[in-house]
Length: 276
Image (cartoon, rainbow, N blue to C red):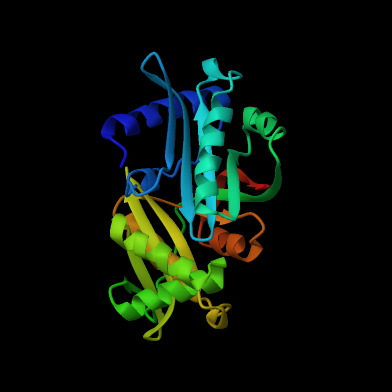
């Protein structure tokens, strides 16, 4: 588990890097704050007791993302190469098949670095923020906390159907979420039957919506829009800003989110590392 001092150092370095580069890093602080300590996932480089380089490993079922940074005054000294090598060696031990290197779309330093890495562009992802929009509530589409064994099975199957997880990977992923995270897991119900799921992480005045999925056979019926409207209004009433992420190639989801008042404000690029 990361200490408060380590977390503070990561945030301080992030601020320096973002201010210098004019971009936003995706460091997944909800995951950093909930490390279980069972595996090596974070790599640090200090000079003169100051954190000048960091790399984090973030597991999402059958794939892993890597994201890191180096202080602008300490670049071109091999620091990130060293951190990345350590991260990749750790993942090699775990026999991870899909490794994605994450870089802000607007980061020129990241693009220059990636030219020398065996990787290919995979996908772009938008971060979206809700802009106040009039939304309506449908009484037949509701949210309730995920609490039972049956609910867990619904979540597992939706990870498989919507996000391409293998079933056992989905079970392990959802077990970790329940054991290590304080996020709220919701089951979406339509006419009293389980229709989908979503997870909401609240922190520092923000609410982030993750893992939003509706069973394929129930898509196209407006259930997703009504569920998203309900959770957005619920979080807004708490005084929280509401955010979510979507892959740029997912045109259907992008259209849905925009129809509910979400607007893209930043993007991340992902490159698949050619392992071996």
